[in-house]
Length: 187
Image (cartoon, rainbow, N blue to C red; front, side, top):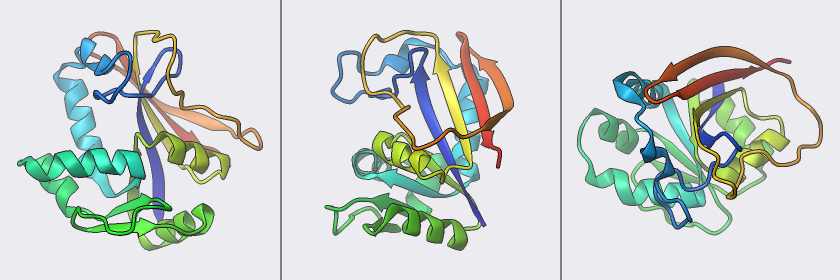
């Protein structure tokens, strides 16, 4: 049985927009902070532990334009692993091992969780994550908190139909005060 694991870079005020350089007032804002070697290793280990990627279309397009040109262990993982992109407009993904999920989100993700054994990583993908949270489809949330208040930008949290309970299962500080928290859904 698969487990949906959301992983986000997030500011103290909850902004998750453009951590890696998209068109935004503060592009690359996460690069203002050193995660240190242990923080870098955490992100690498997290990616290598995933069995599949679940991405929104915009995040998919960013990954698909970047990762095929890289080499190394992490690039090999991303390029060789199954990838699922949620989109109502994408019909012909160019990145190898990619499938498009265009049906009902609950049905598609429930099937994916049944078919994939292990972690299904959901990096970035703000709208997709908000939809997954609203449908109570997320099993774990990993947040890498950066010590900055951006003041504006797209936030991770949107309205949900009901409250959900989460247990803090881990927290570690890396580098320049970058805090990673792991939360698991309690049922």
